[in-house]
Length: 464
Image 1 (cartoon, rainbow, N blue to C red):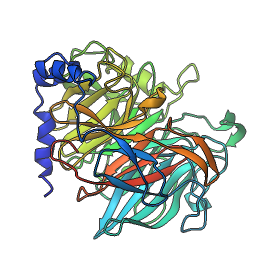
Image 2: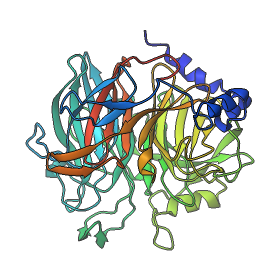
Image 3: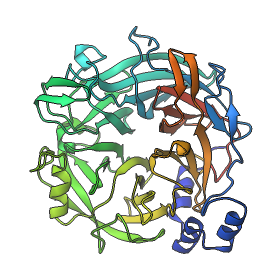
């Protein structure tokens, strides 16, 4: 039975500094016991060891998973979609935007970076000479089959992450800031008809209008999620050496195109949240205004205009904020390379209490290295997509409410002339993790060569 969502949230909010800190740093007797068992500091066994598992669709051992788990792949790059177009490449952020019985509608980002032109019709194209965007998929959770797929937005650049809204749409975010005009982008010189670095909305039952939500800011966007209670949108920024955590307050709840105001988080007494803090630390939060969200290009021509303004107004600095997930009153987000070891942090903002908490910090690469997209399981744990520079570390991890971290899946993709692919793709990241409403399926993308998998198996309370 699916636990109450409020209880799942409280499991994480109830973390104490002592419990989480000991687990994460491996300083407790339990942590020392794990180390003696051959596990890195903070790691727990989770579902047990991983081994290659054959894909139910292709028969190939694309993933390593714990015993009892199975999966099926679909939506491979270049294969025909239902609308006749080839599936775009670079599968990234993704979410379930609508559920009707067993039919689940997902919208998936494609982080294409200017190697081609729009893959969609003109009505859903922002800038015809670039090739980022989204596709919309319908999956039958009873049969485990993909029912349809189609283009729903294109002409955007580097659509990385995003988020699902309570009104059943997807917010797709551009991670590249570009001005209008002639520029070198990707492998080509293009004439951009519009500026880039914005958020776009995609409805579940049609296609995007391809109109940027300029009031949310122009910057290196990563994710955007909605706090259902207020209708406010919380956004991350994948920037180095300074990134901000943002809040967009719409003029009209649920109607983002009507505009609103943009704000950046200020942690009281902590101007710099990139280093020097311990798991369990809490901070009261206030918000400083971003008066010129449309000015994403800074004085040196970089895409740091928003964060520069926020820091000048007293906001706090983060480092490479990526994944973001809204669950009840809590907004979870990752700092991919934050923390004293530079290996990653997981933060939680309580929108009701206006309080920020550092719920996990990795002490070493061997524990967790560069967390990216994340989502909450209905059973209480967080799933983290790791995107590191270490080839052997391209994995999915679970984070328990007690602060234990465990490896759940690993990329095992080595191909011999499959769909024209030959070679070792095990260094490709996972992205876009999301659970079906009933908790049976975990959907996740493999960025390159680009495909989606639906994973199912013996999930457990308190793990995933």
